Image (tube, rainbow, N blue to C red; front, side):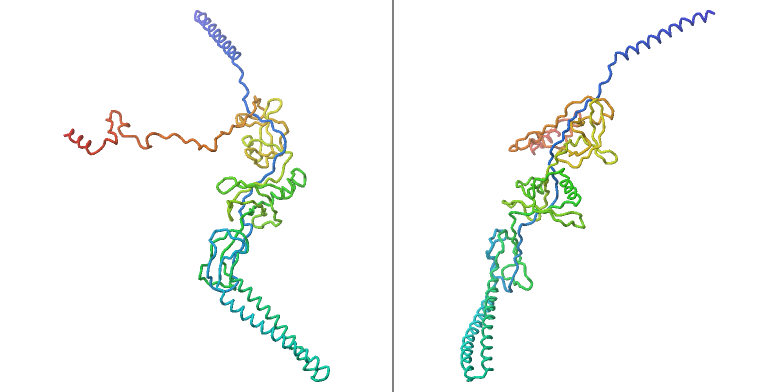
Length: 437
């Protein structure tokens, strides 16, 4: 009985303590602030005119190429140009021994003179027989023979004239001339070499590289899509033959001159599935050389209904589709599947999937989920550091001491400091040995 009465105050005390604890938790939950929505940086996208440009690989080719070959047989007597120098059209490059062709010309001229003399005799005889045949002084057969001899003599003159012309042409071929104006290459033959017309011996090559061609390769799929966009009016060309082309050289620098398109080939290469696009560039300083690898950017037109979205704001879902997160009018996050066709600088060119004026999340999209309430701030692109091109970039500060392992004494506490390198001469070593003794 007493035990039951003594246990009743303990029960009351426990209930009272529990009530106090629950009231304290309710008060703490009422005073704790509600967490704020995450903050994201957004960009309001707008439709506008976006240039349509493509980058294509290619190689340079000379504007004119002339292979200088031997057209007569003979020994090269002299080379009259410097390898790698500029030559003019008609300038003599080589001199082939002309003695044989001078003799041939003299023989042809003598044969022609003999034929011309025979024509005079045949004409006189034919005229004489014409008078005699009317009086039956000579037979008709003799007169016909005289006329035939005269015609044969005239034909011999024509043949002799052609032989003289041929001999002159061959004699002229002993002077090997440059067919075009350009820059000469390596001389394949030297003085004293024997060249042959039948073998068409290559002697040197002359190339004109100002202006210069750039042959580019574009896939047939890209070309087909471009033609469809032009036909639908979605892309407006700058004009026939007026699309501008810029070049990036092998070392990554930009070529200062701007070129233009010459033509687009209509045949698709069956092995690569590409077509050739030829552009022409001025090359006054001979920066571009034949065979160089370049990358060309062709401005083909303008897309009037596209958007530019920073690349950092675009992701891809597991199926490979481009997606972007947007913030609606209610402040909640939504995911959009977009049509990002290509890049332009640091932006994606978006042609569908976004409405004009939507707020695309550029920064902070990693910490939000769809249907989540967020706070938005205007996204500011990162500022590019301005550097004076005339001043070199600052170098990192160098240490006063050359890098290397620390002295052993510095690593072991209590060790004696070593002598400086400047004082470690022979005299100091002698003094140390005397102290030890």
